[in-house]
Length: 273
Image 1 (cartoon, rainbow, N blue to C red):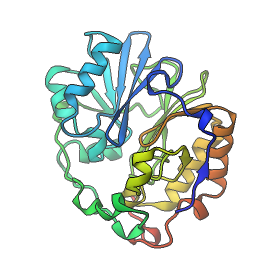
Image 2: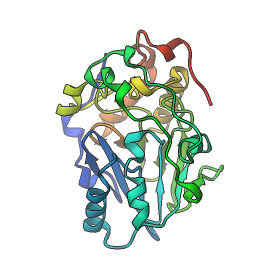
Image 3: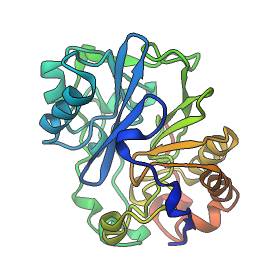
């Protein structure tokens, strides 16, 4: 797959992603903690088995106080895996887009992945990835329709469907910080080698799970129009700087050539909410 390179000196550390934002990598996916005026908020919940690591990380950086809430960019297995264990200790609300709710209340499984998009071992193995829903019951809350985030004044959520129907990203307008989820990646997520080496590049969303490529393109264009300075992706390294902002604009302009696979079941037949 094609790529858009970013200078290596615009990669930033996970423990200093952006003002009041830190991150933790759990194997091949990132979670983030965002400090607010009334505590902190966890963005996404990593892989199954990572709850202990997330709690230790949170204790180190945020103290013993649990988060005010957990915000989900979407409900794929690598973004909700530790939720059950975390919620056993942290009795906090979980906010998501209404279109992600069926995957969080046990109602519906995600569409089957598409290994035919190619790109490497991660894509080839995608049929083995879990896609069954989880059931969080009463803890699931819908994000406010006005784009606000209840526990994070100054932040807004941005609808970025395509990878999933209810995918969102988060943006802080003053600091120009973008928490991407899987709307796009800073590594080629289809390739095991690229994931292992974490080369600083911009790519589209993980192709094997993306079910609407036109919507995915529109979402990247929407995010590029925000002109973010700090970028915190679900997959890959966080980045910051003018060249990163320009690279995102190029990804938006060249999305169909750079990010859209040449073949695949959802490339020509998308699944929408």
